[in-house]
Length: 57
Image (cartoon, rainbow, N blue to C red; front, side, top):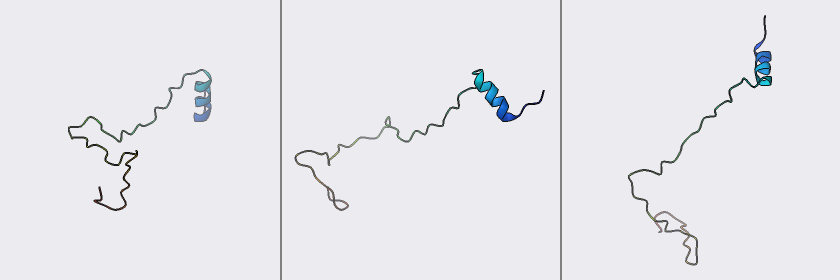
Protein backbone atom coordinates (compact mmCIF):
# COMPACT_ATOMS: atom_id res chain seq x y z
CA UNK A 1 0.00 0.00 0.00
CA UNK A 2 1.50 3.33 -1.08
CA UNK A 3 0.29 6.56 0.45
CA UNK A 4 1.66 10.09 0.27
CA UNK A 5 2.71 12.26 3.18
CA UNK A 6 -0.26 14.63 2.97
CA UNK A 7 -2.80 11.82 2.69
CA UNK A 8 -1.16 10.07 5.65
CA UNK A 9 -1.44 13.19 7.80
CA UNK A 10 -5.06 13.66 6.71
CA UNK A 11 -5.87 10.09 7.76
CA UNK A 12 -4.03 10.45 11.07
CA UNK A 13 -5.91 13.68 11.72
CA UNK A 14 -9.29 12.09 10.94
CA UNK A 15 -8.64 9.35 13.50
CA UNK A 16 -7.14 11.81 16.03
CA UNK A 17 -3.76 10.08 16.00
CA UNK A 18 -1.70 13.23 15.47
CA UNK A 19 0.27 14.70 18.35
CA UNK A 20 -0.30 18.47 18.64
CA UNK A 21 2.68 20.60 17.68
CA UNK A 22 4.34 22.12 20.74
CA UNK A 23 5.29 25.71 19.99
CA UNK A 24 8.57 27.15 21.22
CA UNK A 25 8.27 29.36 24.30
CA UNK A 26 10.94 31.97 24.84
CA UNK A 27 11.41 33.14 28.41
CA UNK A 28 12.70 36.70 28.27
CA UNK A 29 12.57 37.81 31.92
CA UNK A 30 14.13 36.30 35.02
CA UNK A 31 12.30 37.75 38.04
CA UNK A 32 13.97 35.44 40.56
CA UNK A 33 17.48 36.89 40.56
CA UNK A 34 19.82 38.00 43.34
CA UNK A 35 19.85 41.68 42.36
CA UNK A 36 17.98 44.44 44.22
CA UNK A 37 14.85 45.83 42.57
CA UNK A 38 14.91 49.62 42.72
CA UNK A 39 11.61 51.49 43.14
CA UNK A 40 10.02 53.18 40.13
CA UNK A 41 10.69 56.92 40.53
CA UNK A 42 8.53 57.85 37.53
CA UNK A 43 5.23 56.42 38.83
CA UNK A 44 2.10 58.05 37.44
CA UNK A 45 0.25 60.12 40.01
CA UNK A 46 -0.28 63.69 41.19
CA UNK A 47 3.46 64.41 41.28
CA UNK A 48 4.31 62.61 38.04
CA UNK A 49 7.80 63.27 36.69
CA UNK A 50 8.54 62.97 32.97
CA UNK A 51 12.18 62.40 32.11
CA UNK A 52 13.01 64.39 29.00
CA UNK A 53 16.76 63.72 28.89
CA UNK A 54 19.23 61.23 30.39
CA UNK A 55 20.24 61.53 34.07
CA UNK A 56 17.31 63.85 34.81
CA UNK A 57 15.72 61.85 37.65
